[in-house]
Image (cartoon, rainbow, N blue to C red; front, side, top):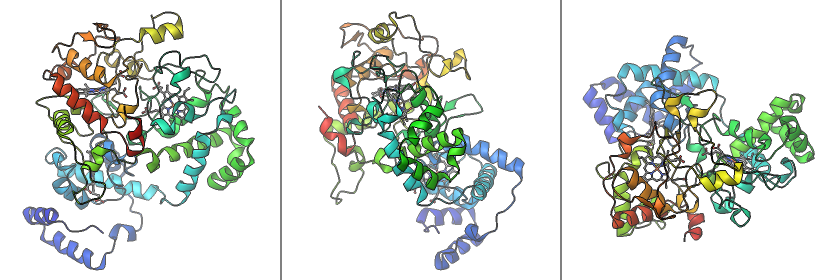
Length: 486
Ligand code: HEC
Ligand code: HEC
Ligand code: HEC
């Protein structure tokens, strides 16, 4: 089971749990896993529900809504003791001391135990499904005119963004669909690290967290993957049935889908489509999409490690500024845990914010012939439709951001430095001109919901600090994309 750490021992001593620590030492000797040996326990459904709510509120950001682990480990089936130990001692969770009560931890444990009863163990099947998903991700045959695959707009050689710049009429701010002319609604985000976003959920206070797309309208990667095939600005297939038919043109796919999802998978169109999307999602969850090997990550390795990276003074300054709340507000939104830097940093809290981004007039004009349309973000979703959330978009991860220009949900900014100066302007510190146009920044697309209480807390950014922040963002580039840096 778990190793005994100094801090856990200390906690047991402090709490006076003599018998518990005695048990731990026994565990350590024979290494049994009492939970694994237990028959499934029937848990009180009311407690399970309460535990689930608490889990979603406090834990899902890191451990995933299915508790299988996103940035934290899988915690399916852990005990109350494991939880209190983690909160007392583990680097990422100590801030929960006093926030998550002992009685709440018990309820969460009941939920996690119930989850163990209903989740099947992982096996090599996932790997095989991911391999199939990879083929589907690169298959142009799955678009109407056979010109686009997922990889066309999410290029693995370019951090999985739409890198067809030479043929793009709007500088890459919007993507061109399968007919070669139709422009899509928003800037294509990277799929790198997309798996870190927890499945979409809403907290008791109405805060939305996680999900895929800039407005979170797809709950998770599987649901997301069902969208592009039949999106009439993307792969333009007329129906999910037609996508399944295209898949069936390849006998290898037929065999693999049957072997991996059941012989009867093609009897039901919805099930077949679900399996197609599911395998793509499995591919997107592989480490190919989350290597965590940027210079920033490598700087955390011990000095003697061959891959250790030593940050330059400028990068160190940017790093300090980024996480220092008395200087900048960046990590209030671009960090999974706003109070400290996490061990495995995601550079997003996966929440929805309006930072007052102006319209991209050129892109709107090219797409619609006019600039009237307003993108309401998550607040414009039919199922949310709430003016309180108008203009809010998912906080994007900043991993690989230096190679994923243009920026923002509408691609309105071309340079990283522009984005940093923009935040200084929004704080009211100066930088009143957009350096890309030499004109005043245009008015926000949606004004009423801009998060000024946070945006105004940014201390003025000198040129030196702007350079430092930019050089810090540069070292968030994964090793395989470092050659793309200017
Ligand atoms: C900010 C991210 C974050 C949040 C939120 C979080 N955890 Fe964790 N948790 C982690 C990380 C990272 C680890 C692994 C720490 C390590 O190994 O050093 C961890 C470890 C654990 C462990 C130990 C598991 C093991 O096998 O070692 C348990 C149990 C746990 N978390 C439960 C919870 C519960 C319950 C909650 C909600 C009350 C929660 N965590 C919230 C990040 C988080
Ligand atoms: C024509 C270009 C295009 C194609 C083809 C395309 N996408 Fe996208 N993708 C986009 C755009 C644009 C967005 C953002 C749309 C939005 O947020 O409303 C996006 C968003 C995403 C996201 C969400 C990332 C995040 O962080 O929220 C994922 C994941 C994704 N696409 C995967 C895929 C997969 C899988 C396929 C193939 C089935 C695919 N895309 C095909 C353009 C494309
Ligand atoms: C109030 C929350 C918040 C704060 C504070 C914040 N950001 Fe952001 N950031 C966002 C959101 C939301 C977006 C996307 C907005 C959109 O597209 O409409 C974004 C976009 C970005 C982008 C563009 C990413 C892309 O892929 O398009 C960069 C770069 C960025 N922020 C860096 C920073 C830096 C550096 C700081 C500190 C100076 C900072 N942010 C502070 C919420 C925030």
